[in-house]
Each structure stands twice: as C-alpha cells, then as structure tokens.
Length: 48
Image (cartoon, rainbow, N blue to C red; front, side, top):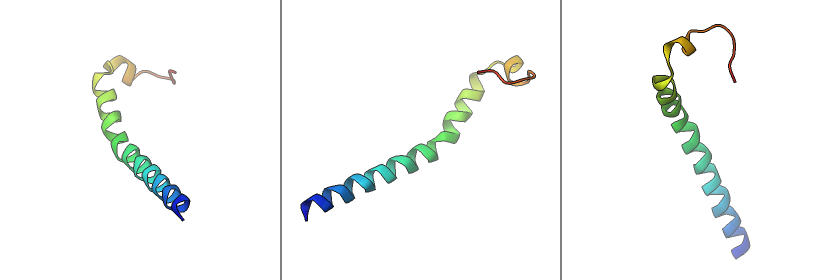
C-alpha cells in the first residue's frame, strides 16, 4: 500500500510542476520580449 501512496505523491507533484511551468510561461515570455531588440521583434521571417 505504501508503494501506491508514493506513486500518487510523485504523480501529484508532477502535476503541480506542470501547472506551475504552464502558469509561469507568460511571465517568461514577457521578460524575453522585453529584452529583445525591436529590430528582431519586427523583422520578417523566423529566427531560430
């Protein structure tokens, strides 16, 4: 029974981690765009 409990805890923590990463992504995007020069933001094409 303890094995299932630890598996449930790990699954719960993984779900929370995914949610936190999903919630913080807009903040990361905001900071990334704020430090990107304008000529790169408004240029034509895709840069990798």
